[in-house]
Length: 365
Ligand code: NAD
Ligand code: ZN
Image 1 (tube, rainbow, N blue to C red):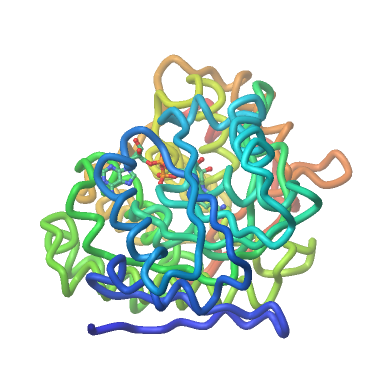
Image 2 (spheres, rainbow, N blue to C red; image 1 turned 180 degrees about the vertical axis):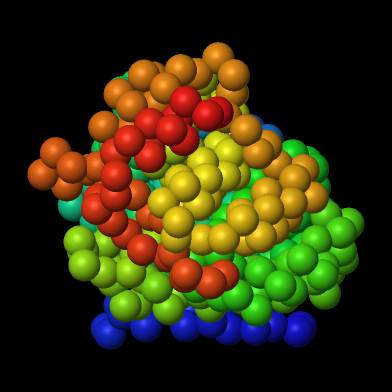
């Protein structure tokens, strides 16, 4: 197999991200990171018919593991605490002990939920990830943010809980709907904007190859994204107020408001982040922190990825203001945003901007 390894450096909790094609059939890559005898695969009703049996087979090879599964309903609207109880119900019914490993097989929703289930079950069992969407392969499966949504706010209930291994088989993207592919690319563009200008330029040259799912282009984008994510997470695992991890939330404060405001599942996460990134770029431009050329390049690249570049017309400035006030980046009552500042590849996390400019941005869209 052709495989790349990206390491997430967290001292004694460090773990590898294996990236390649056909990895789902290489159970040994997973099994060497699974310490106990039992595995609970958590997946959903869309992914199960396509990948569950292959995953089970890979784990069962070698004859050392007992494998059970739980299949959740599919959708962001099911990323809730009551659906999560199905995972704990299954684990308790099967009398799984603290040596069990919870394995997330799916996109970001399954990954975030499984990680949180693992963090809580008997105060913490082992956790591994097999991400099957671009979003999960480039972003959500790496870094240990886990959790569920609350009716009042996106990802408001959760825990930091790192996996022991992330197995990225880029072949799984073959079955992903186009809209989901684009949604994941939104986070790939994010890495370019916040810290990797050459990567952004590579995307400007290769966006159509990515959308055509050219395997070489996909492999490069996934690997480069994982390298960026791993570096940021290693530098600031818990998103401290002075740390760099918050920069990964570029576009997300606006984006979460869109996701919550339109109802979970109506806008895909990456779609909301794309429109949110345009709003963050607009504010950055109004503050004089980026030039018009960069603003135009951002909008053009997102549009080429077939992502939305405007928030939903139904949402008012007041609705944005109240939803954004719930955001976790609000510190001591002050709204902090990730804004672009300087040449391509530079951003700041700040609450120090003219609020009248934010009003201008909210009224403009
Ligand atoms: P998702 O998990 O809902 O998956 C998208 C859709 O694709 C679903 O319908 C799913 O069933 C289907 N699917 C998954 N893999 C497939 C495959 N290989 N073939 C066919 N269909 C497949 O959405 P997502 O975009 O992967 O993840 C979004 C979630 O991730 C959001 O809840 C977001 O908050 C979260 N997220 C978390 C982090 C983090 O750091 N933890 C980072 C980014 C996003
Ligand atoms: Zn995101």
